Image (spheres, rainbow, N blue to C red):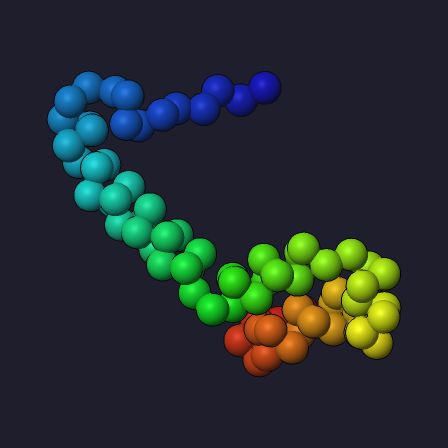
Length: 73
């Protein structure tokens, strides 16, 4: 099993160098998770496959509808 390294627990100079990048990464993740598409995906995940079938759709169809042309599926 490969050993992983946590760069934020190393020497203080490494922590100082890595901290801004880690903060930017956390901010981008928070921004993406707060977006309207992620809210729609959360609602989609709360539905069962039976609920979707009753609506006449499927999970892959809903994902395509939510993300439109912004990602390739």
